[in-house]
Length: 340
Image 1 (spheres, rainbow, N blue to C red):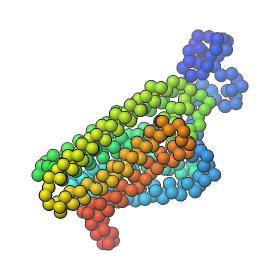
Image 2: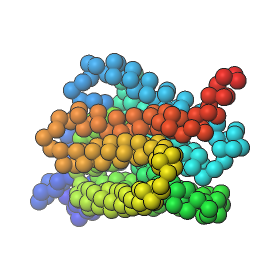
Image 3: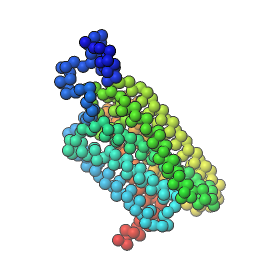
């Protein structure tokens, strides 16, 4: 029989109480080895449908992660060592490198553990920590791309005041604002996830704890969480893309007013690296997120592969693109390699 106190507990845990019989019966409790006080432990399946190929899939994962770490740590080392690279553009490049390292490190080590060693279990606290760090770093990456677009706008449209507008102190404050924005926008997600009840289904068909995937296996009402996540995606993504688009419209207008073709080419060369990184990052980000929410006809393993491509490919290619497109950085890197 279910007294009022136990009835309240049933409602809180998300189990079904019909009339007098209360909560899960003993048979289900024994079958799943669960008690109401159990700390949830989730199972990450990896890429469903491709389990037999996990060992081979891990090879490009490990390769991309290794190249990502080598490239981005090289950027941090070069900018830190070379005094001539202590300029706003390269400081923003360092911020981007840091976010790339955090994003890939949040995902790849756990994914390799799943693929190679079958380490599929993850605790609720570990799951929330992973999704929090990943989402904060992703929002910071988008904001850094906006800051880099503004940097190019000032450099081309107002070069005489470039050093005054983008002083090191202002860049440090901007970095702090970018970090605080990421924390404030992401913090409600793990708080809402931690309050959701999880019943017998604790299998997450993914390589990492993606917030929406975790919410979908909850036996509670996660409508508000899904709505919040979608609104944040559309608002923040819309604002970031609008600011970047506005910056480059003003840059193009300024470049077209320059009569010299050589000046045209120089101005465009300073932007090409950032444009390439921006298009690649936002394309992967929006395509991955929108297909995960609205692409119901797409196979689950396609969703998961797209999500991992977004988290692996841009962090790996960003330092390569900037190394090729930014002449000063390329020259410094080549000089140091040949010296060694």
